[in-house]
Image (cartoon, rainbow, N blue to C red):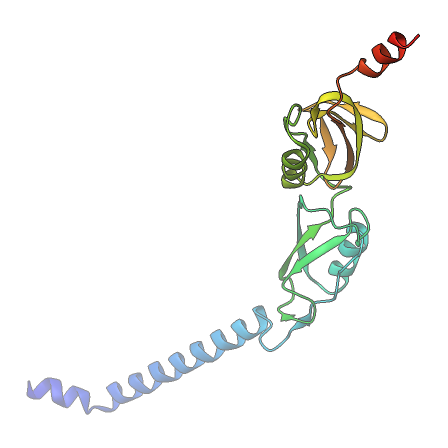
Length: 196
């Protein structure tokens, strides 16, 4: 034990201990400098506002400031934005990020997604209107024809063309309901003939 304590107090041990501490300090200093350089510590890039840019414009702008990007598809069409333009970005504009950070973009599709016309034939006008609105279609008008079922839907038209349940239309399309007025078809003609 006495030999061990003498060794700890010896000049050789103290020199080796001092060198080990110096080497440790040097390694820590070099590691910190490397981390600072490789992670761009304290160096940030402000994320530009990519809103309404085309995908090509966004790519150039992102590369110019040293950012990476990933384009995500969107099913929600926004008519206030140009087709295939940037709808959303994450992180948002003005955020300070490290260079080479990946920015996620949501792109406006070319138009509204298509929805399926529900089964509304032989359904009341009121229920048909609710069913159409539920899938994203609007009733622009109602035309009445001579049919016994009052306010019953007999068919629908889109831009003057007759459509069938199961057909697809762009969301927010305006359709016309063709409904019965409660009159038996042909009755007025029979009365007119009987008067002659």
